Structure formats: structure tokens, C-alpha cells
Image (cartoon, rainbow over all chains, first blue to last red; front, side):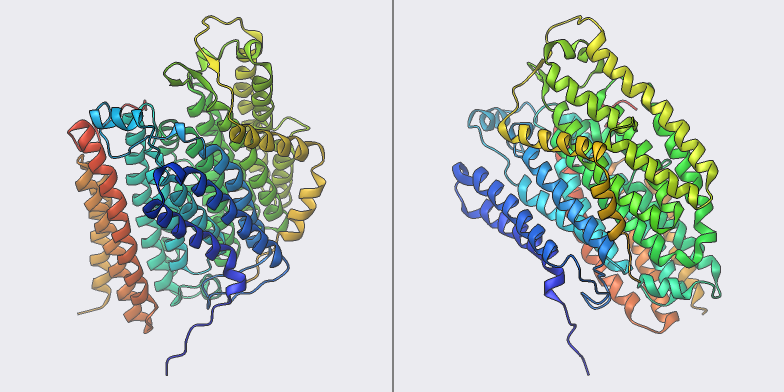
Length: 502
Length: 99
């Protein structure tokens, strides 16, 4: 006899609310007149996220492995990661709400009459909000998914909207479309690898649940397990842009509209690392002799490559892209640590890094000349004299990326490296500290350019930020400063929430 | 016929797809190669379902088909937009972003 699956709606509410908000957003697109859409969509998005956050707060002490049969596990770490995604999304939506960064009519050819008239009519592409909410829902599902098919579906649910969002820049549209194409083809390639690996894990364990895969470790046919772990890792390492699967990152970060880059850089990292931590800590914990050497090597290469190549960049968005590659390497140290401290440190690091990233890209969107954003570093020379406040905030966020003491980045790096040290990975810690030192060089070079070099041309200006951008940049900066000065509050929280149930 | 042969076939299809993505230049063909890889994974899932004697693998195959269909919608939208703006769907022509 068939039995109906039991879903505990209370535990799934945070995800379901965001999905419902996204569907409602699609309906708003269809039925509300153009004049009111922007305001309604923005209210709807913020309201949905706040409601979801409130539901998450309500279930903060609960845990269950059977929230959706055996496909979703709600536990402490999962709730922390979901809350991080929502908080980052709340700040990111304020950046995205500046719709003059987005194309007026995505289907119009660049330079065509259609495009001209859509610009004249001041039409706006408000589909961005539902796409954004779908991506957020996928990102919330990804770190709590505990079977292979839910993982795959969540991966696609948050990736597909991002592919589209990357192609919607208002200025330099060919560049933006090209970045969407690259992101899509390489992303789909990586998810095919993930799926093929998942098939072999299923073949090995006879079940698709992570707990089952963990329990089956040590059985016959080890080759299936090996193939499975490697291919699944390729798919996941692509999403966090670890070397050698990083090549899309600089292109997509540069080509995508800057608010989308901010959202993508911050939230994708949290979601993908959440899933990686759960898969490796829960699903592959018993087979650590297979994957730990591989992931250690990837972490070392990623840290060094990201830091070294960033030095050569002349474009600020590409520089931050390589810096995000380096940060993926630092975060992988937390995965390799495979202990409770590693998990707690990763949770703290993801939170701190996410807000610093949002703030940095939010500021990049403000530096413009007559034709749009200026991301060429040479034209940022002397910015500190023209708009000291903006330049000082950007410098502070860069110092946080570099991990200078009294910033959130320092606390995160310290926590993650000490966890890696505890687990006996001395080599990883040495390379990590070395890579941080190299990285500090190019961050500080930008600060010197802004403050201590005389300006050569005056065509670059800082636009007065709209109230929404201003709020989001201020929130990001304040959180980064607070976490640097008084990290213990969040560190304790992260420590309390660092627990995957199996 | 041994059931392992289906796994070999799946591995061969996956390899053809993976190599195709790297060597072919037309975005549509690259995309078809990715679809081939997804279907190779499906074949592996169904074969393992048979070997393991449970239905989970077959259920996964259904989900994969739906996800692949969604991917086609998004992918073709992006490729068609690119083609309309530059009259070419070659991935080599898309090189404005410096390498």
C-alpha cells in the first residue's frame, strides 16, 4: 500500500515562503501595470525575506532529519547558513533595487531602435526580483539538502536564475551577454559532472541519502566510491570557483551587472560551502582517506593561484574575482579540518566575507564616468581626495579581505587556520598565511592608489548613492567593523550552531 | 548480456559529451554535448537501480529530465540572445572579456 509522504511544513516554512514570494512576483509581472511594478516587487521581495527570517527564528532550536521524508535535514548549522543567506539577500536586494544598472528590455538588440525606445520610455526590467527570489530559495535549500537528487535540484534552482541575471547589464551589453553564455555553459558542464558522480555514489551505496552513503563506506567496489566522490567534488568546486575550475569567475564577475555580482559572490559562496561542508562532514566522513589529500591540494593551489594572479589585474572587479578565488581556498581549509572548530570557523568566515563582499561591490557600482561604471584601476587614482568617505570605506573592506587585525576578515582567517592547525594540517596553515601576505600586497596597492597618488584625470566621479544603496553599503560596513572589534558575539553563536546531525 | 555493459556505455557517452564540450565551437553543439552527459548520468542511474534492486535511481532519472528541460529553456534563451546580437553562436567569437 502506498503511504503519503509526511512533510513538516513548520520546518520547511522559511524555504516555502521564499518560493511562494517568487511565484507571487511572477504574477505581479503579469497583472500589475508598469508604473507600480518596481515598488510592489521591492516590497514583496523584502517582505518575503523578512517573513522567512522570522520563521527561521521561530524554529531556531529545532532539528529533524525527516523534515521532508529523508531529503532535507534541518539542524543548527543548516539554520545558521539559511539565516546567513537571507540576511545577505536582504542587503543585496537593496543594491539590486537600483534598476538603472539593469537593461530596460532584455530581448532588444544592443543599439537597436527597440532598445532606444525602451530607454526613452524608461521601462524597467522588474523580472529581476522573482528571479532573485528563486535563486535565494535554491540557496536556502542547498545547504540543508541531504540526498543527492535534492542537492542536484537545489543546485539548478539557484544556478539557472543567476545565469540569466548575469546577462542583464544595462551598459556594455555584449560583454554582459557573453558572461552569461560562459557562466551557463561552464555551469551546466559542472552540474553534469556532479550528476554523473551522484550516479556512481548511488551505485556504490544503493541509496541516495548522504547518511546511507556514509554508512556504506568500506564496502566492496571502492572504485565506484572514488569516481563518485571525485566527480561530485568537481561539480561543487566549480560553484565555489576553486582552482582548476575557476576560469569562469573573473569573466562573470566583470561582465555581470555589479549588484548581481555582489549577490552572486556573497550568497553563492555561502550556499555552496554550506553544501560542501554537509556533504564532506556527513556523507563522506567515513571515506576521508580518499578525499582529504585531494581537497588539501586543491585548497593550497587555490589560495596561491588566487593571490598571485590578482596582483596582475588592472580591473577592480577582476581583482576581487581573483580575491574571491583565494578566499575559496582559505574556506576549503575549514572543510579539510573536519572538526567542530573547522565548521564553526567556516560559518563565521562565510558571514563576515559575505557582508564585506556586498559592501565592496556596492561601492564599485558608485564609481562612474559619463558612460557608466569605471572598473579600470588606473582611473581610480586619487579617488581618496575627491570622495574621502567612499574611498575610506572601500579601503576598510579591502583591509578586511586582507585579514588585517581589527577587521572581520582577520578573526575569520585566524579561526579557520587554527582549526586547520588543530587537525594537523601544518602545511595548509603555512601556505595559507603566506597567501594572505601576498594578497595583502595588492589590496594595499589599491589603497595607496586611491589616497597617496595624485589624480591624472578628472573624468571619474562618484555618483551620489540612492538611499537604498546607501543603506546597504552602510549596513555592510557597520557589520564588518563590528565583527572586527567585537567578534565574540558571532563567534559564540557560530560555535553553538556548528552542528550537523546525521 | 552482462548488466555492466550499460555502465560502460554510460561512461562512453559521458566521455564523448565531455570531450565534445571542449573541442566543439558552436554554442548549440556544446550545449547538446552537455545534454548527452546528463543522459549518460541518467543511464547510469537506471542501471544502478537495476543492480541495487530499488527504485530510487529511476526516480532520479525523472527528476533529471525535468531539470534538463529547464536548463534547455534558460540555455537557449541565452544562446539565441547572443546569436541575435552578433550573428554567430561560436564560443570563440565571444571573447570580449580578456582572458
